[in-house]
Length: 164
Image (cartoon, rainbow, N blue to C red; front, side):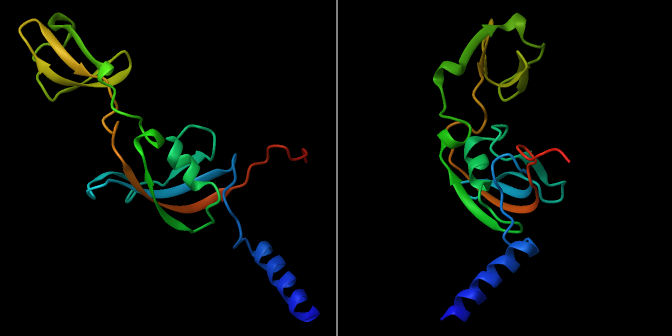
């Protein structure tokens, strides 16, 4: 019995030393490949064929559900997560539909165009005689998103570690 426990302890220690147990903790810099799809399978973004995405886990720089999903993942682990609108880009908000004078819009603007207003992207919904109706919601607001995420690199945080 004691030899089985000792063997288990040794195997656990060796696994920890080889890095196979390396997992993402808050504050670590993580590099991932990902594919984001809508519920119907339509791909809206992917790192495939590009440089993988690098960010600080838990720093709030990513959409909340994506940020949360990587915490606890191990190196080379892949998983699929489904995020509600609240975990992603929020609910669609009708208050983000605004009407502006046509004179404030670029000449030749038409429905379907994407413009930059106040530093953010807005979609032109309709152009009337003297006004333009804009949608300032994020294009993915109100949508459930599905992400396949693979951790390809973990750089452990040095926060709280003594200086060398």
